[in-house]
Amino acid sequence: MTGYADRVPAYLSFRVAPAEGPIAALADQEAWQAREFYPELLGVGLPEFFYARERDAGGWELLGRCGDPEPQGARDSLGSHFRLRAKEAEEAGDAEGRKTWMAAALRMDREVVDEIRVRGERFRIVRASKFVRMGRSGPEPPRPSDPDPGEVGEAYRLPSRTEGFVVDPYVSTGLSDGILKLDLVRFVGVVPGVPAQVREDAVHALEKFPGGVLLPAVFMVSEREDGEWKAHNPGTSGTTPQAARDGLAAWLRVMAPFTLRLSDEKRAEYARAADVLDEKRGNSLSADGRRFRITRVERLVRIGPDGPEGPRPGDFDSQPPVEVHTRQLKEQGLWQDDEDEPVELDERARELKALWDQEEARRAAARARKAAGGKRV
Image 1 (cartoon, rainbow, N blue to C red):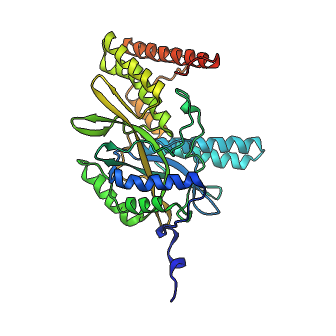
Image 2 (cartoon, rainbow, N blue to C red):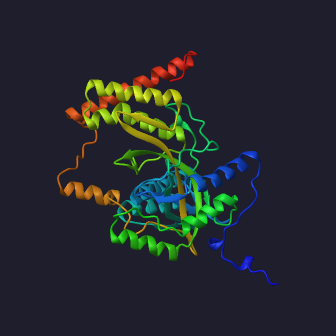
Image 3 (cartoon, rainbow, N blue to C red):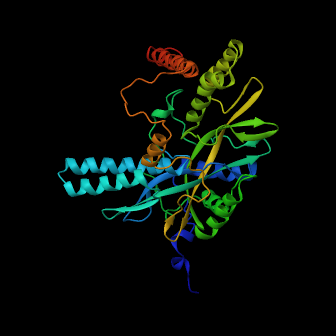
């Protein structure tokens, strides 16, 4: 019998290998159990965007520390990367290299560019779709095997799990992740009520980018509203469960009092809820009749014959390139040329600054107590 496995393109292959070591085996078992307890897959409204470089050895390397909820944010980051490469070339005495990298950076400032080749290197803006698993009890929380090493209030200091990740369909995965990839690449994954353009883009992506690679999971906050679980802030996520808890605690202490104009009594109630979250490091919390849950988010980069999927026409992209945006602000009379002139904060801005200053002081005091051997908060 003739085998055809090697003739299948890499982007259409789902390579599965046995788990290496007890931790990997546990993670694969938990992933399989998640299919039973949280069988429904739901798309999260906003995708993530990264800037990536094609590797000579195969695949695309994600260069940024984290993703951006809009394509232009990733383009701006790629422009910054080019400026860094220009500086490195200048320090190495490579005048021609500096000129080429700066020309690429300036082009990113002026144009909407999703793919560019500079000095033989190919760069692309890469799109990652986000999904959550849902069960009878609600969205899937973090799994015991999910890394969660960050201290309370300090999770942002951890190294990125995305920076340097290689999007390569040739790399094998465990059985459960392989099945999840198969499920996700066949899943349109748009939320109800989206514009027709968004749904058409998603259907088109199934045909043009039929393969996929899973990125490391991230974590967001879900809230129970009107009998349904919804993303508390679809555009934000944390690389670890503690990063998501820290974000929720900051919202309870700072943004909720500011945006909801809470009374002093309510502010104290929300602050106590944040203290409980810090102390117990749990994945569920109730405050003022509101229910929150730390939620595990799967991410998939779709792959086609020419590599990973880029931004779609219907993706939310509110800002133009920086040079275009600056020109628009000047035309509207909103641009201030003197960067040294101090910005006068209005009353609401001063209120928000005061809340953040209080939070920073609280965190500093907590770090001092821990350093002195006190109780972790």
